[in-house]
Amino acid sequence: MLALLALSGCARGPNPDAGPAELSLSLYSGPPGTPIAVRGIELDIEDATEVQAWLGDEPAVLLVAEDGTISTAVPLFLGSAGWPEPPSGPQTFELRRGEQVIGRSTRGV
Image 1: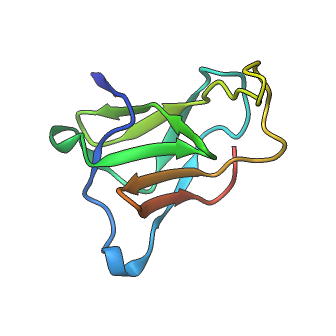
Image 2: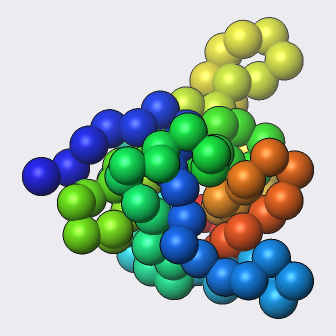
Image 3: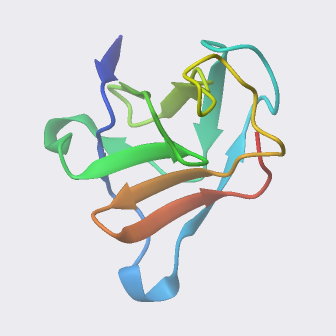
C-alpha cells in the first residue's frame, strides 16, 4: 500500500554531518505525472511532516510505501507566464528537512 504524502516524509537516513545521501532514480525523463522510483534512502511514514521533496525549484509529491521505499512523479513545470514550460536542463531531485538537504539525486530528471 502506498500513502500519498504531499511534500512530506521522515528520513531514517544519513548522519546530518555526513552530507546528503546519494539518491538514484528509476526514470530520468517523462511528461508531468510520470512515476519515478527513488532509491538510496528510506522514509518513515509515521513522521511524515519533516521532509519535503523537490525537483529542481518545484515541490514534488512524495509517495511512501509501508516498507519505507519512496517514489515521486514529474511535476508540471510552469513558465513565468503560467503556461506549461519544460525546464531548460536536468532538474535535481532532493529531499530536505527544513533547510538541510538529506538526499540528492546523482543525475537530473
